[in-house]
Length: 229
Image 1 (tube, rainbow, N blue to C red):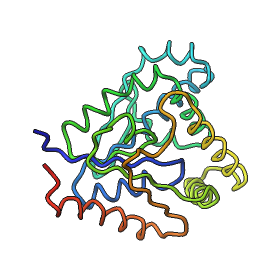
Image 2 (image 1 turned 120 degrees about the horizontal axis):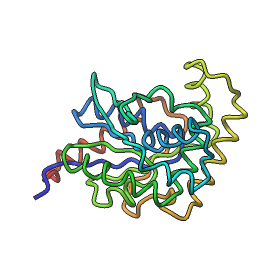
Image 3 (image 1 turned 90 degrees about the vertical axis):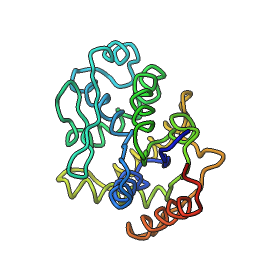
């Protein structure tokens, strides 16, 4: 019988999934799994090796050469490719768009599928992405679709990039986000959409603390009602 609890958080880019999921995992003692970082890692490797992220032949030919791993320590998640920590190298707008391109390829999704599923089988997890509740963990105990207006999401991402010293503009971030929204929701393989049984949470105008508390209450109510097996 299943004895692990899985929380799936899906939603568009910049909705705050990763930040909120990470804080929730720390507070509740769950393992946080940022699946978007896995696709970013592959997108980063494609760029680093001189390929184009939308070149399916190049990308799929590269996959056998990659060993992608998730490692946790000091309350944080780190992404390694062939033994090298790329966690701080995969957050630029360029890599974000590359991740969107490679994630549309069925071969890439299959390549990362088992890593994500196996992690959920072995741990109580909060896993965020774009197809967690629909494809990766369709039997997740709690499914949440987290969203916000595209302008609100762009403002958050712009502030995050500026804080990290990335030179960009709000307009560029907004344009990139609109493009990624379109690409993610219109791809043929595992498009971005809410699972039929997902709880939809709109965080437009919320503080981070408000959004975290909303999701925390949902999870704690689920556990307190005795639904955890």
